[in-house]
Image (cartoon, rainbow, N blue to C red; front, side, top):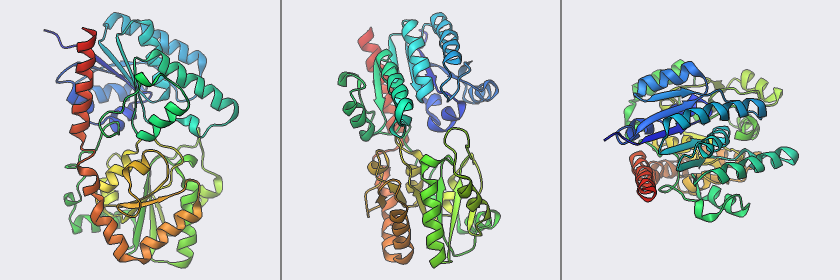
Length: 387
């Protein structure tokens, strides 16, 4: 008997690689999995490595109505021909394109995961447009999965969809965390010493790390302000920045980029396929983002025994417990980030307490295979209901 077809759609292949890392391979044991995204060569490389099928649909992360209509038509024709049992989308643009095309094609199970909402930071006409698109996406979906309690509550408060369509898989997160892979024991002291030397870090200095897209709404402006102020008082600290510099949709101010480039104790290493070595050489993650769904990088840090300073937003404040495995600060508040960073550096007893609690705080709540099994059960229940 042929396996039912499961189609997973993201706007760019990077989301398939990182946001859903390992998940499509797991699902391929139960479904015929087809990955759909833009960037044809990268998508085909990903599919070949993971042993799944792929289909290329040009999509952009910007508002591009004409291109989006073409993407919907191309995807509609593919879905009509394939007749999948489930179409599951991630990321905003893939959501509206995928859910509309799946609805037009009569796909019985149209699922969309919400892992962050750009409209939370948008204003004026842009916010209205994004709200409309989000409502439309949920209208075409049969189920909507916010990946955090905060997003669940926000969607309900804004009345974006009927409550009956909403559900959180497991304890939240789109993919959970592989605590065997993200394990501090993978790196010896010699490994960490070599890595720190390669990066150019100063031995024995207290190392803060940020991992994520280098954009304004990740809180980089506040982080750089807080770090430079603390550095003026305490020279034995350094900041490691890991992630792609994106200057199109939400650019950093020129003066912040200049500080990152010129500061003697800020090391920027760009995008890294494997962030574990950079966490291994760090003491504390600082992630003062303005909006999130359920940030994987915070899970990864805690799994590597790296406590986190995060902003008081959904997702972050569900993973981090204030003064237990990290610190929670108000968003867009550089002085609060500075205070939290300063306290951790100055109070080694406090820092060690946070570090001791970091890994244990997530191991029993967000183990990756538990999330996969919960999602698989959801798929199987939906298919049984349709049957």
